[in-house]
Image (tube, rainbow, N blue to C red; front, side, top):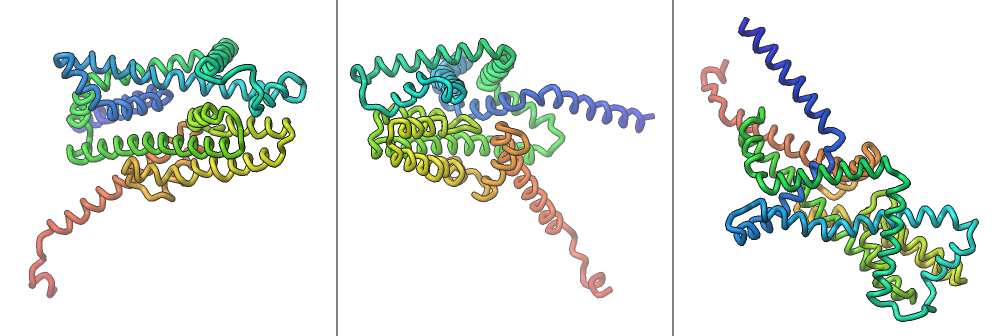
Length: 349
């Protein structure tokens, strides 16, 4: 009976764990990103907590406010840029006003100086577009709200009690403590490499784009470069949401040569940075222990298999698989080293 009881308990545990994984499957991406973000923000939270007399919840709340203050406007701007680009492409052939609007992007004739006030007006215009987009796609907006809420709650929880959660997982995981801790460090290493690589790649693309706009004599090069940095984080479209409309605007203004040059720079310069330079920056900046070609294959393969989320899942799976294979080999080597010597008599037989 004891054997039957153990079998039932083991089977029930497997079923419950599979169900738990199924429950979290749709929201794995914001949870994983929240864990990585918490790991990166942990030093900041620790410093703020010391100033708040050891209240880690205060440090976590301040860190989350900083994160949202930095990234929510960027995300809204990215969404509005995508929606504006799609709307413009739809109306391009039918609306003369749309042609004029695109031509104005590359025109040096303005009614006044382009400064902070003008830039704020541009942001306000994009914000209205983003709000209209959210109103039209209520379902997508509701899911986005779920994702953001999950990320925020998970980030706060991991910042406040992440170390306790990790200790509990190590204690209850069906793995030796050393193996669990090693896989945990590998998990954090992958996130750090992906985050740092993405930031450095976007910065490099923005620098190349800004320099190209300046050399070609395109006005508002700094603003367009900043938008290029934002666009670099949008999967699928990327920086093309900025330089492609600008190139089309040059063509509409009769500057065909500059339009061709900018298109070539966008395709083989700005665009190639994402495909070629990103793996190097992930390895160098984040100390991610995967070869460059494996990172490239992991990103493309993950994107093809799982969509935009595959850009995270692909490198993570390959890095974890590599670490598991390394640990398996080390265990085999240790078993051989610990094996008893057969002795001369057995060797002779």
